[in-house]
Length: 431
Image 1 (cartoon, rainbow, N blue to C red):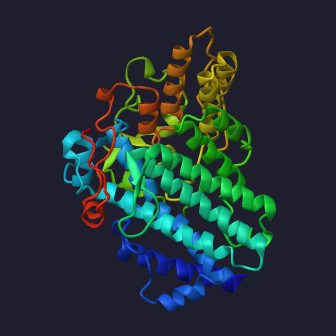
Image 2: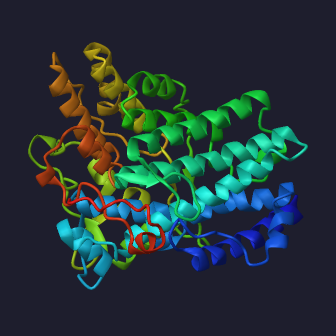
Image 3: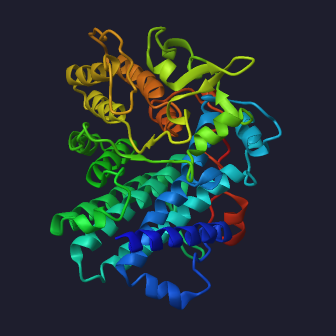
């Protein structure tokens, strides 16, 4: 086992170098120059496990990863963040918004390229795992890789009007709605594979234990079903998530939390204000304990800074929060509409005094009756607070029909690297 993990670490390092070399448009072929060695690696459990674990590293890796890029892009255009240094040009573009954001923006390019890299590598694992003799180990590889493939597709669909329908040269595009459905289909396939062959203990011993595979699949299905307007499926999948079990990305001194690295420099961004950028009826209650969870005043001179999941080098970053799953239930019920049940779920978040990650409003319960619109407005407010700096707010702003004037972009332009290499690249949105 020790030999396997050491070899995996070596392969992850190689994968990281490969990412740096391969960060280009999704039309590129993400292949190692030594193709024969790659083919051999993809034919073994050890090689496929290394590639699968590498997906998480690509997703969370420094400022090039999907995690940082999605949080930063979302945070600036939805007014969660304030820019500290105008010399950070990509962040300045996003902070300014409008036509200032163009295809040269490297934050958007990193998000695009890393997401497509993940899709490419996940496809390699999924297709080659089917050739393994140990079907239970293969099931683990497929399920684990499917999580990151779905996250990559889902993130692209949150930020662009259309996304590539796979990887390859001059790949065709699909609508973002089709993208969410594609992410759901990836997760459905994983569940089918697991049902036929439960994930083996040997596989689980070789991958990070912090990602609860089954729970995460149901949580992501619930998220993307909600985003695609399939409220019945969203509710079913949210109910399938065990809220007593956490699923998160783990960091340490060797692989630090990039949000902490950025925040501790105090040179890129911090929270816009103590209200998390919310205004009007969405301003948090003064007693809301989520505000001191997500923010703190520190430094000399004292300034408002991010706390929460950016608090330390080893701060974990949740793949989903328990509160998100509960709020998915509340929204799905409100839109059916079942207002009574929706308010019950919403109050679970409003009155929560603790959860697995310490995100708890600890407020008195909301007392109705509310109209459907009033209840949806409250759900939006509490999603904005509960899921601060998660990268999800821009999707929420569209879904809850928030005024365009409250955000600095609605969709993003396509990276020039993509446009230069794919004749199918759609026209950029006007805003």
